[in-house]
Length: 245
Length: 166
Picture 1 (tube, one colour):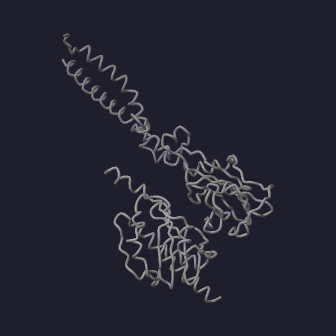
Picture 2 (tube, one colour; picture 1 turned 135 degrees about the vertical axis):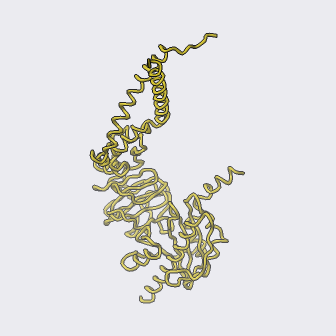
Picture 3 (cartoon, rainbow over the protein chains, first blue to last red; picture 1 turned 30 degrees about the vertical axis):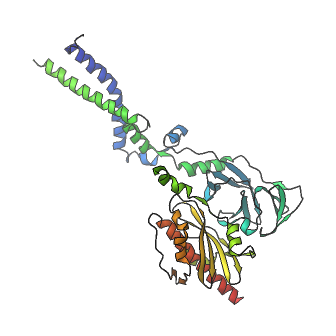
């Protein structure tokens, strides 16, 4: 077996290579450390980053809307169980929105088992199901000349003003509510709801400094850097001892 | 066994009885036409005082027949709304039932051994006249049921007053 000999030359080499590798991290730690030290002076906590990659790292990504309906200028959308009117959360439902209409200053959302009535500013008026006279198994909702129609269980129903009484009908010229593409303005407002202002620059620099920005091995990477710093210190001390006259 | 103990609260979530079936049961298949009250002005304030927050909607539907009124009300336990069905007769709770439970914990409030405590309860000021024993691990659900019991009694008194005036 070959005997490993620790020579002055090999220690010098270890010291040089370790120093080269560690110096990059030391520069990084020094810069981020100094920035954090003057965080308040530099207003780092008042500046925000909102890049998509960065928001993903912080689990602040915007989910995809499951349903989007547009009534005049009002946008109704659903993200997970949360239903939004514009960017305001109004109520939760595990069922998909099948349609949305506006009639007599009220927004009416159709779900399979009920109609949900909202004011124009998003206040919940009532959830009306079978117990309130609404036919079950709703497929779609539409409007024609201020009359509300629903297609439920493959039958066409016309509702009265209060939506408590429904009668079977055969009208076919109904404007059925259909999904729309989310308007850009509403998309921005909803992004703001989900991500807030974004990630503060102070938080980002702090996570760069402590390695947390790299989710899976940031902490371990800093452990390796710490270990290399120890090797650098010990090898440096050893070289200094050997060079003493 | 451990698997069952851990997962049993998840299986307790769901709809135990539909609103329609509750009404059919209460009114013996002869459900009267519903009425609705709007929570506005002083009524809204009183409801807010009872619950400690505004009610989820501004219109509440009820069914009334031969001195009995039935209410289907919702209140959040911890995170999700619990749907209750309540029957009031002579200003007293005749029946209270959990119709739908969506929380992860606290579904024990659905058991008759617990709901039976509310039977005969009336409103004294803004409190129930009966002491309701809690359930450990279901504190928020118990609070929700107590709040809804008080609210239904209050609303029943309200509609009785309105009917007397008319």
